[in-house]
Image (cartoon, rainbow, N blue to C red; front, side):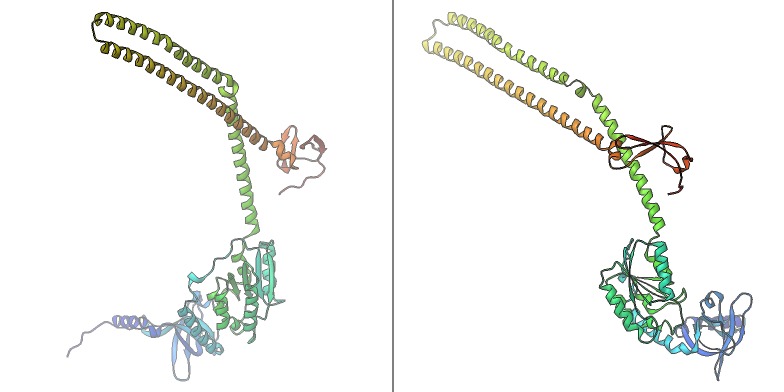
Length: 465
């Protein structure tokens, strides 16, 4: 049976792809002794890792080896974590390392990785469980070692960055085999102290020094806390188990303060901006109200309220005159009716008494109806007159109340009101002074108070806020 001939490069590429797709060969942890270490100008590390029976070519690129906390040398026994692959141009198998630690902590690493995997599967690392940090925490609990450099760094940063917060310390050991239970106790007491935020901090150290922060019970305690917690353990490259379950992880103790508190300088600048905007808004509102008051004061109703009243009186008189014309109209109609009746009587004198009686009844009914209509018109006019008077009284009262409210509002926004609360206005040459940079020594100033004025002279100037 014949076989197809393939190039070497294709075979090597196939082997490389097969190895890189094999999950067993990814994230491998191996132990061995460094030999043939070479560090060129690129700062990549090229070396072999060997034991008594085999040797493996390894590479650790510069962006990865910067995280290593010690300088390796030939003969060092180390533990590597990385992926096994193939270097195509040489056709040789190699390991691309992502982590390197001295061999003595290999068991600790294995234990830590197993614990991380277990807690991850339980969901303790999920972002959905992390609590939101308060924007302006004023009551903060600090859990750290007593008389340590990390504690001093944290307190110094607090004094510089957010000095208005109250710091409650819960000192505890932060190193050693017995440290974890005491850290747990301190965290529980801090969580029960009704603080807004808890910071757990510890300075840098080796993996063994920081191992108490990889305790499973401690991680579960932090996950179950009701108070938001920020961890700042070790240096930037150090990551412990508590960092995964905390609500926020900082790279250093100082960084824990920085990520959990605002900068008071920025807060003051923001408040100053809000104050300026508020003052401008009040001034704009005052100007609008003053213009509105001027428009109202210039209105014809307020200038001459009798004019509106006179117009209503004229309308009432006109209505009364129309009403007074109704009786004469009735007389004219009655006279016409009488003439028609007389003429009808002359023509129908021969009619029966029944027809004559019917005509008389209709005449009487017409008179009654006309009187009823007159009474209804008088009653309607009376109602209209009362409604007009009531409307005029209501409008007069409302305009009077609006005027009083506007006068009170104008009085409330008066600059003299501000002066009555203890403020003053400083003038130089009849010009208001708002900046000390506009003054010189011996300048004569006038200070306007709520009551009276004060003449003074500048003896000293302090610039800035």
